[in-house]
Image 1 (cartoon, rainbow, N blue to C red):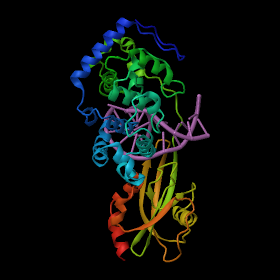
Image 2 (cartoon, rainbow, N blue to C red; image 1 turned 180 degrees about the vertical axis):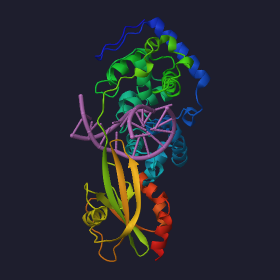
Image 3 (tube, rainbow, N blue to C red; image 1 turned 135 degrees about the vertical axis):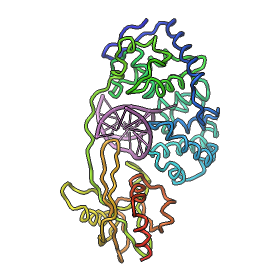
Image 4 (cartoon, rainbow, N blue to C red; image 1 turned 120 degrees about the horizontal axis):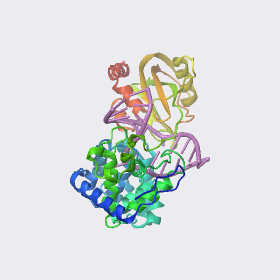
Length: 379
DNA sequence: AATGCGGGGGA
DNA sequence: TCCCCAGCATT
């Protein structure tokens, strides 16, 4: 029914009879096992859009509470367009990939201002919005509007790679096209939204990366890798480079009972989020001196490092961070920014109102930190 | 075509 | 510890 896929980008051909049988098996399975997720209870294209943005590189379980809060605060695209970015970031706090929030907010304003407030139901218009790539365009248009676009995400790639023993590395350049071709070929144009979700659900619930449940898989009789007993060898993946490590030092600068926070620039890592000012520690250098120097460089304050407050480890995709946080005093001098977008002296109570990134939350939640801060702020 | 961009969950 | 997750933008 299929021929093996070669190492090049040539997609497999699936004969129509197999295609139809496969769709039926998948649809029947999905009807039985589909999870009751909040975004599956609505037809609202805006709500479905929000869910797809949040689900980007993020697991369902993580997304659910964020999705619910987001739609309670911004029930329509008009609400979202009216609020300012900081309010959106505050709801996004902890979810990661903050440019998603930035882009979604920008896109909402574009829809309201230039598209009559209606989420566009055509590919060119919707795909042109910031933060909308091939995946989100296909997902929203198929699920909310029934349009015949096949989605390709990590789950779909894994399922297809196994079904057709596709040899092309999923993480390599140029892998998208062949997978998209197969996905479109396989798509059930009668109910594209259901079909797309079914493939992804299969990838999440059955066709798992490490321990696939092939015994319970509705597609095992169509699966080339299953027949060859090589399921876990797919999808192919090219080697990736090792992650580096970085050490940073930051200071909690206290003056008149308030803490100094700086806002990260509008672009780049953790854009727009707030943190304690600090900077990198050169390998072998003393963290407290690095803290002192970084604060002088970034906010123009000459601080006195009073002592070590807490140490935080945090892993990003491309590097691991070890953050040393010191208690500092700076009785005089005024702030002159060099790098941060803004600064603010806040009370402990106000700390929660600003969007902070995860490493800062980890620091604040660490043993004894909040007690120490309370004492210092009073004293 | 390659790289930057978070954070969490599971093995 | 490492891998992977309902990807997109930028260069």
